[in-house]
Picture 1 (spheres, rainbow, N blue to C red):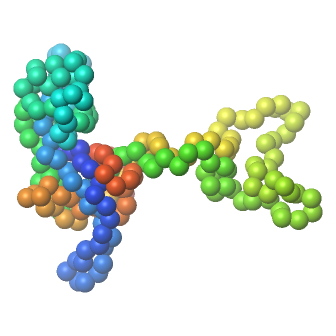
Picture 2 (cartoon, rainbow, N blue to C red):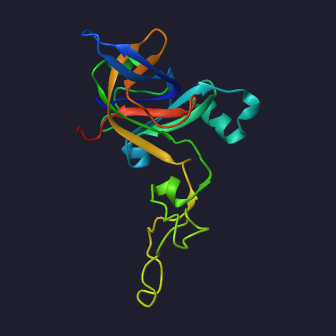
Picture 3 (cartoon, rainbow, N blue to C red):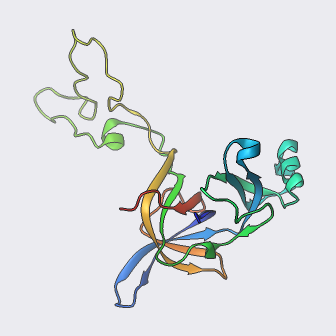
Length: 211
């Protein structure tokens, strides 16, 4: 059965394995999540479960969303995310999904929103090289260079590396290993780095394609 959970990125640390080798890990507070809605092929055209994570005050929830939680008879949650599994028969509304849904050694994909860094130039955003510092190049050493031919095609191709918004977009890191699971404290230690800032919301699911 496929697995998935919503969590909060706590930060990075390191742990040691049996041979004494240091492993850099990211600690995620995973769950507990509650099943708020279950979608079926008969009613919705596909199978999925909607999980809720993180408590929130009633004054922060609008009426339609409050009614959604009331229908499911569950507490108000800050984050709602839908997981489309091949088989959702093992989960029902009001079920609790905890960190121990994953085990040590599982290979997972982690998604989150990357840190927003505002408007950035091509050097920072696309790792472009800067221009020469001599022979009349200045004062535009960090500007983009040639944009292409002038007469044909007489335009800039789509996808050209240009300045613009850097970060603040959904990023998924694939094939990360679960190194440790602390079910009592709802913590999962994942090898390596994951997207987003500290306290950012992330989703952990079984890997789509193993390396």
